[in-house]
Image (cartoon, rainbow, N blue to C red; front, side, top):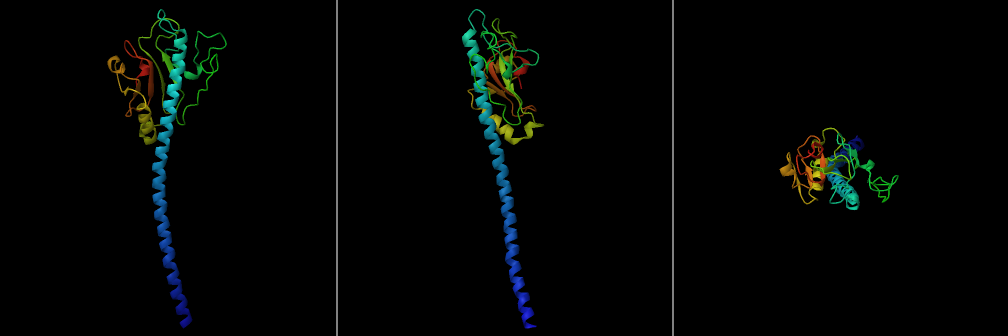
Length: 215
């Protein structure tokens, strides 16, 4: 009888520390999950900032390179042509002054690797409001843009934070609805917009900005 009572007392002592350890592990798991969530948002934001900013700068450099090479004060436009209805995929842009068969901006006469869009984003597009390159002017401006491909992107804190940081990497960024305010912008991004569209001017408008170059 004495031996059974002693065994029961030992069992009680063993269960207490076990319950304490289980509770402690639960607390640690909750804290770890919370930290991981914050770290995840920060990681997404950092990736978007780095990718969007570097890709925009590279694309703008390649487009300007074509104009520097073939644009003149007489024709005012050595920039690649584009579809004025929906814009043209940046990956499909041609530098019309280059030899036939070697005009693609990325695998033509001066090949450069165009990185794929950052995760959860669509491909970059470009519009030349003049339409055809090598002649005329583009009163509506020329721009490139990208936007998230996920639903309800403005509710994604990683996307919004990443694009805000990317916009701030440029000299000027603003939201605008008319030529006067767009004229001072290098980047146009509205963190409150449903689309979270990120726009970079190649040349600013001299008249009403092309609608593709607005949030």
